[in-house]
Amino acid sequence: MRSIRGETVSGSAIKGLELPKFSIGVGDRFAHQAKAQLAACIKAAEVGIDVIPVWNKSNREHTIIGSEPAVTRIAADAAVKELGWTKPYFLDADHINLKTVGRFLDSCEFFTLDVADMIGQPAKPEDVAAFLTAHPELVGTVTIPHINEPFHTDKAFVEGVANKFLAAVQNAAEIYQLLVKSKGEGRFIPEISMDETDYPQTPIEMLIILAMIADARIPIQTIAPKFTGRFNKGVDYVGDVKQFAKEFEEDLAAIAFAVAKYGLPANLKMSIHSGSDKFSIYKAIHDGAKKFNAGVHLKTAGTTWLEELIGLAESGGNGLVVAKEIYAEALAHMGELTLPYATVIDIDQSKLPSAAEVNGWTSEQYTSALRHDQSNPAYNRNLRQLLHVGFKIAAKLGPRYLDALVADEEIVAKNVTENLWERHIKPVFLGL
Ligand SMILES: [Zn+2]
Image (cartoon, rainbow, N blue to C red):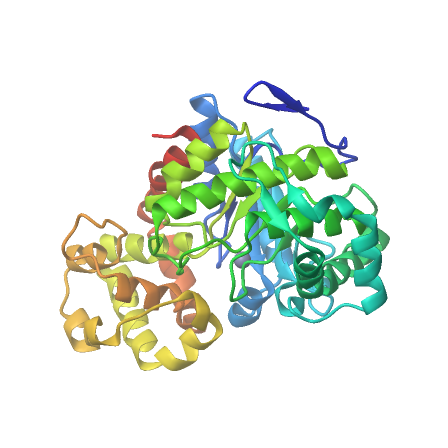
């Protein structure tokens, strides 16, 4: 049970593994920074706030790098052991579907069921009809506590939402059942993600989707909607911050209402994907979560890989040489690198420095262009986005890249920890 401004809201009790209130998804593309990432969570614990690490890596990233989830598992377990972390931690099979879930079964206990591809595929007419019959409360005036204006819906609207999302939820149920069979009920944390789609979901759509998820008996503990505005990889939010804040709070209200009404898990919380570096909305996220006494899962990924590059560049010497080489190669292969991320990046090619120019840079010039400090005039969001998707180049360098990480471990780790702690955990979870 939890309380929203004094009211009590109850959902169903969690059976088995439970995701704590605050958690941060940390991607570690090359499985070398688990300790540095965990160190940021330790800093949070030291000031009295539990932020639980969840190591996430998608099938797409594993495929691009040529890695396996077992490697992430080994790195996370080793870091936890070495730093004496006694609180929970999880490994997230990020954005999986029926086709890709297999390789993650042994190593993960958090599964992000990606149903974005199924959104808009019509469900069977009899299933849509059954949903409408089961939920007369969604038709007409729908009042969600803590949302000022009630929603007015009609049968056609709810039918439309069902036609857009029911097949996707049914698909998620299929993946969930497969996981129950293979891992056992309560032995993993399910999330449903709908972020990699074209249209943001409105709060009333969120409520209707949650009703479908409850009907399909998927005890999700996190849900990742698509929010209004652009969530480009590795750079700040682009959009109307006020509008985001309003929608975020209304989504929180819809979640709290659905938890109580449909008996979803009591700890169900929002998962914010592409959540790294969205500095301008962190205050809204913090304030909204506080107001609703809600949990937050902030999923970051590429941030750590960019901090590796910053650390290498900062170290000078061979690290800087490797960082320059990666930029040159990324620039030469821009089309191929950006293709899988077309909807989540926005690069102005005319603002990218040439490889020759970057080759002449000092450590400071490189780190100033790359480090996400918007107050620095040398910061270049186009270069940052290109390098964000450029990890394939580092993967191709193989041992040359990994050896550089080991050689400059200290300075790389310092950047990784500081970035998560100062720029992410502090504003989102502590409101600082
Ligand atoms: Zn996502």
